[in-house]
Image 1 (cartoon, rainbow, N blue to C red):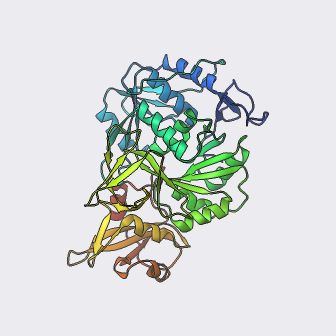
Image 2 (cartoon, rainbow, N blue to C red):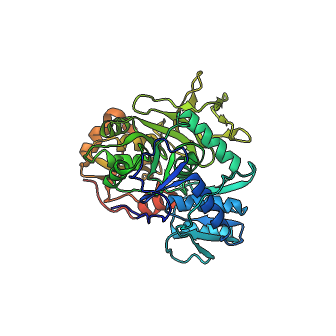
Image 3 (spheres, rainbow, N blue to C red):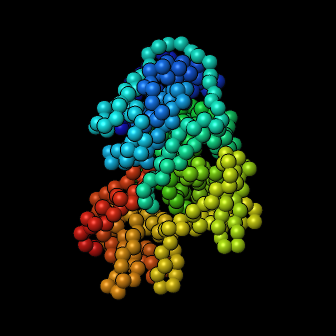
Length: 452
């Protein structure tokens, strides 16, 4: 069963009743209906007339098509879309407190947020309208970082930035002329979800899929039932679940992954399971995506065309790209090769130093979750009785402590082996598979399950 049900629109033909491969104007698939670009812009114009006259909108629509037309209708009205890093009530309240003139747009009933709420309903007016474009300098969104390293940070993006970045990614991934349905497991409020499942279809022949399948079998069924070959945009968290399922992956042409480092072994297992190639894209809320790699075969990242990473003598890296007004200083730690490819060594705030040796928590987490029999897990730092930094871990696994340590020893320096391993039924993560800082702190304060 899907996490959300798509109510069919009245206009549009049955997605299964026609050959869509040569339908150049096709834009979206929603429930049992197909929607062309003329219909998209009619829905945008009609919705724009209904939106409240406020400068900011917190777009919480779960249906990806309704999210898309709300996003574009807000642009028509000169409104800025606020994109939260998660749908936790406290996070949403913080954003609305920062933008008190905003209102909430949603297609679902939600707990009250002390702001005007606009109900986005499926449009039912048939017809078409000409395409629209917007001024490149018009502010389109304010997206917020995930909060995995602290309080979410607001990142302003113009329409021109989003458009140029999408076109850059499409060229880098050779998708600019692809006729595929993009099925995403990531909400459109997240920058990765916005880029791949909304912006890419807007600026290419790729087709938006309105749903968001969540469970592995649901994802496989959605891909198999789509009227066009599919590109699956997902995360390492979902991939770990997908590789444990059985069944043939029909109608799938490729997989895109992002939001966290993908282990090489998981990438290979995903390719073996699905029978298609997997590409990982690299970026952030601040920069959008700017590089890719085929993780099963490549350790280094390849920047998109016209993207340049330059590294000074102290290791600091600047990103120069067509969609950025000025070079961006990158917080992660990199090793840039002479040919422009690069390796990611970890986040500057992610490094741990124990016994004079350094590693990153991201790399340690990758090694941990790469172990067969660990469904999820992460490292965290603790202080011993002498006030020195030590490492512990939490896992979702039936493996014993001894089995986990035995699997880690060949791939990890002994100083980084976890002193304690805690067991949980589930690690709380956001919709894109991350653990926000406040979620991690709450999790660690509740740990009381002993080592096995």
